[in-house]
Image (cartoon, rainbow, N blue to C red; front, side):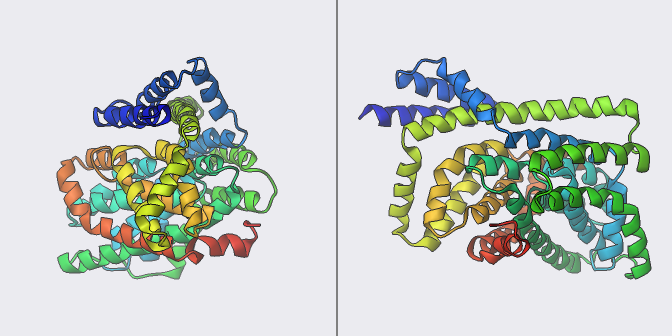
Length: 434
């Protein structure tokens, strides 16, 4: 066995063992990287150097701003308004509150960019509301956690920024535009599944659709939705960079939350900032550690070896290659959180995906949705845990109720994987993709 193979086994083997032993992901990545560097005869001083290099990026400055914007808007009293807007739009359907839950997640995801924030915020309102109307609690929880993944696709998503940076300077504006239609496709797929289940269980309808009521609710939600327009139009139109737009969005969301919706006071701002710092510290340590891990992968030529291996298994068939990539990402999602998957798997799988005919932007959407499904699967699914805690339901019951929605999400994933226009049409039409 040559030295390079031995180092690769140490890097990946120690990482997997620590994941199975439920080490915190940052420690697992950092320790396995340190062991690999030692096995290669490298000085451990290079580890902090590689970590600093990983976060030394202007593009990554957008991440803390988007996280802060999401926290301000999420705690600023906008959840009720977005739920009312969704109710005026789709509440008339069979299983109306399930539809409201799904559409509200689409709106809220465009503000928070976080599936966990969506589940915690909307779930605490929607699940009790659905219970009172006679919906099964496990069904309500399943709808809440699966629809929260729309927020990962709908801009502004800080995970999109992480992917753009990791993939080598892909346009953040193009990625933002690429997420709208896949997010809507996921929402429609979940609504179809919800409707079938609602008909079977005879869940209630809401009030009849009223254009007057819809316009009224749209007016009340205007200030919240305007934040999305500021970010997306500003970035795509070239008015400012993603980082600049994120900074402007923070100031705007702070103003709206305090002075318009009055969901938080000036004193509450400091509590919100504490929450931002807590989230950001987790994200940045993961980015730093994963950058060092990725450097080891590159030194050991793992991406090239993985590409050769997948191509060999698929026999050069692009359809099988794409299905294998999806399978790998789904399996990783079951044992790892979203950010480290993006940071570690992108350098390995992106070249394989491009060789199979996928555009890097289409692959980014594929990866984000796969990671989103992973957030809902045991043993590591953080959104699954949050949903179970909010609903006060055993996790196994929630997983059972979520099974039909897994199918809906996989259908959406397959369509995104094999129909490039779903991801690519909007960036091309708007000129975001040049």
